[in-house]
Image 1 (cartoon, rainbow, N blue to C red):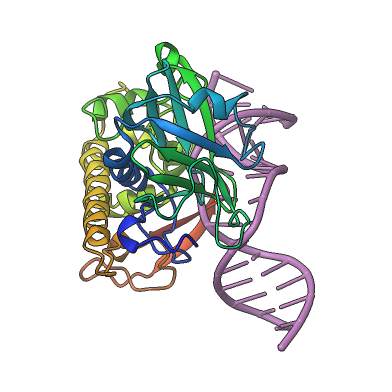
Image 2: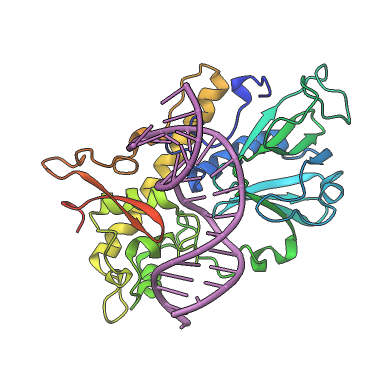
Length: 315
DNA sequence: AAGAACTCCTGTTGGC
DNA sequence: TGCCAACAGGAGTTCT
């Protein structure tokens, strides 16, 4: 699309079109780490918003509120990317289902300043936002399904803004522990799967990693969430088991994403996809990966989402 | 108030 | 071969 060098592609860590092509917490973390060295400390010299909305309308005067600002710091919160601007606002970006960023480093000879020109003279399909930075980099947001969105929120209100208010703990922080989960799950009758997907409980867990964590923990996704808490409200053993597994699954994926970025930087085209480590997700009908387990991976639908699990070793 | 259902979107896939 | 339905799913909204 951009004829960009593979070394400059950042995005979700999977090949387009391959299963697992979904931005969950590890992928968002990877995108943040890819954007940071290119954008932090730079000034937005130009912003092009190519349509009035993504999933939601852009904030009013989006282009002019970002243009001229310096990007002080970029970080992840749950599945959101937060770019803190010198204007006192935070540019919040969500990748939705299919959002990705492309970075085109410009040495200056390709682009005419102030103009977004492609060899066809038209805007490539689904390139919805183009950021031009003071170091010459062109950062493009592309999102075919437009489930993503962007917003601008005052930095002083960031933790209380509509995106983050009521949101649960970060799964990689110490705030996520068995006592916390037990307090949230106590007497809850919803499915364990749906409970873990609920961002009000844990912020940033998505379908893939919930499936993988439950598999590793040997817990059935059909259990009730209340199985994580005793009648007294104290954590159960399976809760104590699950918490470190959630962290492990996410940390492994982030490590795989980091190695993917390094592979891009090496421009060798060999990508380390974490999806190769998926043990149940997308493996309907395949033999269970657990040693000596004769089961096969099953797929059911919970809360409108596919759940993959082994009915034999997940109880 | 909790929980479930519905909605948005479009590229890909599978069945006939 | 071509067409159409099903599917992917985060998260906001709307119901029961």
